[in-house]
Image (cartoon, rainbow, N blue to C red; front, top):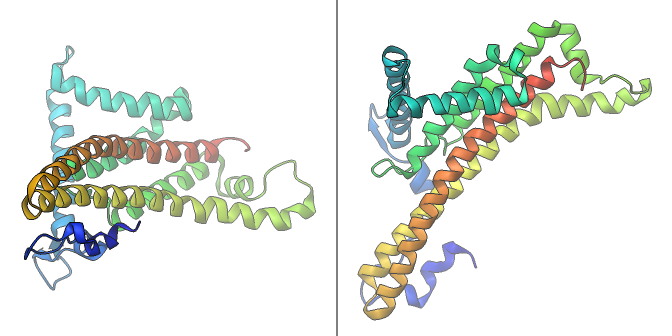
Length: 274
């Protein structure tokens, strides 16, 4: 059943009260301007949340750089755990310990940046991911895209990098007429698109489901009468809380997947052949 058809069901009408209004893409992802309306510097709710996430991350890293000690306290341990996860589980495991360190700033920026942008979707008062509009996922995808191209050119030289990327070794000459366009689409077109769409769609879907749960909870509690309203509202509330926890996991997972794929692309770019 289409969730947007729920507002037409009789059970979701209560006396003279308003009907249930489900979340829509336009309402949730095209909010009105808060500051500088009508100018190139217009700031709406989602842009403001992105700025908050970026500033908080920057402050945490500045604090860590200035205050870290040989014996870490609890807060320092949390930051180091995130940094070590990016360094070891993403960089060392995929690219290799010897070469990963030079690409760690890029991978850490992607992982922590997306993680903090994603996690705003479950923070009360913010309640929407900074990556739930295409602009931010696209920026990270372009950053990863430029990163693996630059890595390949630095390691091999431009000619060898593009030759290895478009003309894999060991293939009969005539096959390149078919294989080279496919490799070009796969490497230089599909990669940034899939990075963008995967992150965007996960954040959009998660936000809409959370809004549906909690708006539905409010409606069921306050506009439906009797046992049916209380029971169904409580069920929707517990469902929303469960999905809130799941959405935290999804936000962290998507940050990891994006950084992991970026590391894989770097690894493919700098390897001798693939």
